Length: 95
Image (tube, rainbow, N blue to C red):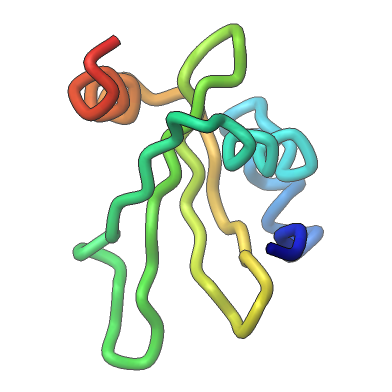
Protein backbone atom coordinates (compact mmCIF):
# COMPACT_ATOMS: atom_id res chain seq x y z
CA UNK A 1 0.00 0.00 0.00
CA UNK A 2 1.41 3.40 -0.93
CA UNK A 3 1.77 6.29 1.49
CA UNK A 4 -1.15 8.72 1.50
CA UNK A 5 -0.55 12.13 -0.07
CA UNK A 6 -2.08 15.24 1.44
CA UNK A 7 -2.88 18.62 -0.08
CA UNK A 8 -4.49 21.86 1.10
CA UNK A 9 -4.98 25.48 0.20
CA UNK A 10 -2.37 27.60 2.03
CA UNK A 11 -4.91 30.39 2.58
CA UNK A 12 -7.42 27.96 4.11
CA UNK A 13 -4.60 26.53 6.27
CA UNK A 14 -3.79 30.02 7.61
CA UNK A 15 -7.49 30.68 8.31
CA UNK A 16 -7.79 27.34 10.13
CA UNK A 17 -4.72 28.06 12.25
CA UNK A 18 -6.13 31.44 13.25
CA UNK A 19 -9.63 30.11 13.98
CA UNK A 20 -8.91 26.66 15.47
CA UNK A 21 -5.19 26.70 16.31
CA UNK A 22 -4.40 23.69 14.12
CA UNK A 23 -2.08 23.64 11.09
CA UNK A 24 -2.96 21.23 8.29
CA UNK A 25 0.64 19.93 8.35
CA UNK A 26 -0.17 18.74 11.90
CA UNK A 27 -3.72 17.62 11.06
CA UNK A 28 -2.57 15.01 8.55
CA UNK A 29 -1.17 12.95 11.45
CA UNK A 30 -4.71 12.20 12.68
CA UNK A 31 -4.83 9.72 9.78
CA UNK A 32 -1.88 7.82 11.31
CA UNK A 33 -3.97 6.74 14.33
CA UNK A 34 -4.62 3.02 13.78
CA UNK A 35 -7.99 3.48 15.52
CA UNK A 36 -8.99 6.55 13.46
CA UNK A 37 -12.64 6.80 12.49
CA UNK A 38 -13.64 7.93 8.98
CA UNK A 39 -17.22 9.15 8.57
CA UNK A 40 -19.06 10.68 5.64
CA UNK A 41 -19.96 14.36 6.00
CA UNK A 42 -23.51 14.15 4.68
CA UNK A 43 -24.18 17.84 5.35
CA UNK A 44 -21.37 19.13 3.14
CA UNK A 45 -21.16 16.37 0.51
CA UNK A 46 -22.53 17.13 -2.95
CA UNK A 47 -23.26 15.08 -6.06
CA UNK A 48 -19.90 16.29 -7.43
CA UNK A 49 -17.79 15.68 -4.31
CA UNK A 50 -18.18 13.47 -1.25
CA UNK A 51 -16.74 14.93 1.94
CA UNK A 52 -15.59 13.14 5.07
CA UNK A 53 -14.38 13.49 8.63
CA UNK A 54 -11.36 11.79 10.13
CA UNK A 55 -11.35 11.52 13.93
CA UNK A 56 -7.89 10.62 15.19
CA UNK A 57 -6.01 10.57 18.49
CA UNK A 58 -3.15 13.07 18.45
CA UNK A 59 -1.90 12.22 21.94
CA UNK A 60 -3.19 15.41 23.53
CA UNK A 61 -6.72 15.08 22.20
CA UNK A 62 -8.97 13.78 19.45
CA UNK A 63 -8.60 15.85 16.30
CA UNK A 64 -11.43 16.16 13.78
CA UNK A 65 -10.24 16.71 10.19
CA UNK A 66 -12.60 17.62 7.34
CA UNK A 67 -11.42 16.32 3.95
CA UNK A 68 -12.22 14.87 0.56
CA UNK A 69 -10.48 12.50 -1.84
CA UNK A 70 -9.24 14.03 -5.09
CA UNK A 71 -7.82 11.16 -7.05
CA UNK A 72 -5.10 9.61 -4.87
CA UNK A 73 -4.73 12.76 -2.77
CA UNK A 74 -6.44 13.59 0.53
CA UNK A 75 -7.46 17.27 0.35
CA UNK A 76 -7.83 18.89 3.80
CA UNK A 77 -10.13 21.86 4.45
CA UNK A 78 -10.72 21.99 8.17
CA UNK A 79 -9.36 20.69 11.48
CA UNK A 80 -9.97 21.28 15.14
CA UNK A 81 -10.35 19.72 18.55
CA UNK A 82 -14.15 19.57 18.71
CA UNK A 83 -16.17 17.87 21.46
CA UNK A 84 -18.52 16.20 18.97
CA UNK A 85 -15.59 14.55 17.18
CA UNK A 86 -14.21 13.30 20.49
CA UNK A 87 -17.59 11.78 21.40
CA UNK A 88 -17.85 10.02 18.01
CA UNK A 89 -14.30 8.67 18.29
CA UNK A 90 -14.89 7.37 21.82
CA UNK A 91 -18.18 5.75 20.85
CA UNK A 92 -16.71 4.03 17.77
CA UNK A 93 -13.47 2.90 19.44
CA UNK A 94 -15.03 2.16 22.87
CA UNK A 95 -12.28 4.17 24.62
